[in-house]
Each structure stands twice: as structure tokens, then as C-alpha cells.
Amino acid sequence: MVAQKRLKLITGFSKLMPMIFEGGADPMVADDYMGQVENHLTSINVSDYHLKIILATYKFSKDAKLWWKSVINQHKVEYMRLYMFELFYEKYFPVTKRWELRKQFDDLIQGNMSVTEYENKFTSLSRFAP
Image 1 (cartoon, one colour):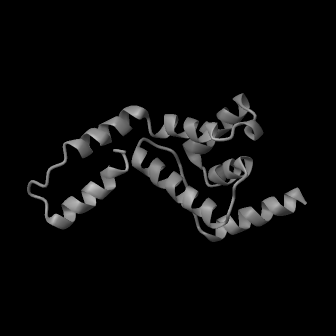
Image 2: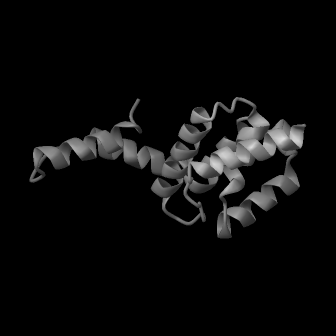
Image 3: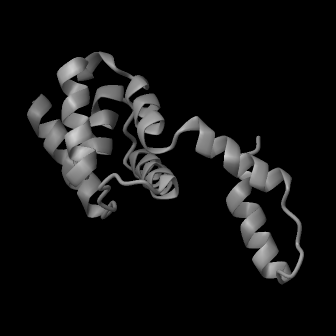
């Protein structure tokens, strides 16, 4: 029964066509990936943390998959809850980068940008400035 439920959730999640996350050095890609995963998990109504972790890591490949294997060798996934997501952000979107983006938001001026460009930049950076 549990295996059928898990398969149904993985199938539903896959139908939403989440992007593949390879890891890498661009923290914005990591943030976009996790934002997309959170939206998908909400849309298929997943509330169980263990299943959230399984689905969030389902599309990991390359560096991200290797990193995840090292994490699960050190931690029991079923007890991780939100800790997995904290580990993910520590690895792929360090606090120093988040602070840098917050400073960019704080220092943002329109300058030579059009109103639309400025609004897009403002919106993009505003998520880093509560």
C-alpha cells in the first residue's frame, strides 16, 4: 500500500515535469529548482516530510545526486524533516550569496534601466529582503 502511494505521488510529480537539478555553482538555479519543487508538492498535496524529501531529490543528477548520496550516508532520511532543505541551501545557496542579493536589493536604483527592467529586477531581488 505504501509503495503504491509512493509510486502514485512520483507519477503525479513527474507529470508536472519538474526540472532536473544537476547542482553547480549558480545559486539562483538552486533557488529556482527548490521553488518549483515546493509549488509542485503543494499542487499534488504532499504534506509528509519524508515524501517531500523523496520527491525533491527525485530529479537530482550529476553533482547534486552525488551530494545527496553523501547526505543519506550520514543521516536517516526518514528523520530529516526540513533539515534536508536546510542542507540543500547550505550547499547550493549559501547564506553569503543570499546576503549579497539582499544588499543588491537594498542598493537597487533604476539608473539607466527602463521601468519594466527595474520592476523585474526589483521583483527578482525582493524575495531576499523580507
